[in-house]
Image (tube, rainbow, N blue to C red; front, side):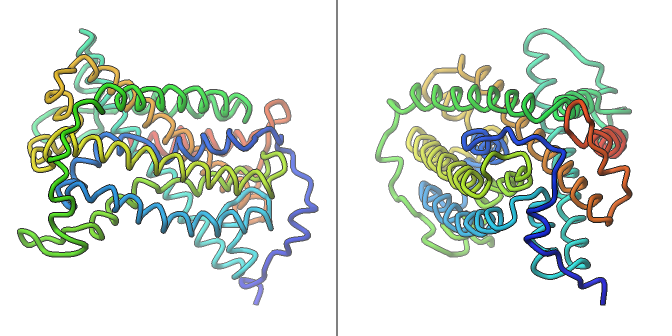
Length: 376
């Protein structure tokens, strides 16, 4: 049956692409880090620590190992079929058209709705930061209609503006996209390293005892607790690195560069997550995070008396969410482009700008209208 027809790898590789190959190993690594490290590195630690105690560090390691195996699979497929489409294209090669169509839509929904959700979180942080600076945005323009009980709201303007801005950046070329992403990731990493340097001296080893108060798996207060349940929480921190493989047609020497970029992003992100976990649970007892569930980093800053760091951490969190949105919208646009080229989407979605060498039309349609509707 035609719905089960498969793509031939040699035909895919021989296909001439209008996209520009400019991405190198560190560009891909920064794309992966941009997708993996968002607010989770400052927020998820609190909930995870309440589930596993200081043993959360092992939970992140366990989750990273699982993602590492997935990353190796993506790296293998990417080296075999270095074309845009990520898991959609790999499904087309392995299982056929109907499975690829389903996987493609799954990825589009994941990236588009994920970007919309993260942009709402970005809006909250941004509005809070502006309030601290004495700048106030009308409440009616800070959330979608009906989403805040007892408060009249019409549209989430900051969220829409950041999506619009990132859409423009992606549409004017992959070179500009990687420069913006690389810059934000470097600043974000600098904020994390500054936080580590300023707080590591306040670690009290006794706060790490017991290191794993709930063991590997147990029930505490009627809910699952321990290292393994916390690993399921930590696993969500790594979601997004797969978007790196969607850049295959814009990567120089993808058979070597893509595997290196994917694994480097996982390695660097894992080291940072584990380091942050050990520091935060070492500075304060993990039980304290119950009072700071939405902002566990504040517990650390209060303990160390470094409240001045909170503003810098907020900037880091905003940049973290910005890079997550950027990578998700970038991945979504390349999936749509690949599906259009294969005839599973209207031809409109596959149009590539001759000036910028980007599938700009599907970016405008999905991001401005689709996500704009979600935020309104």
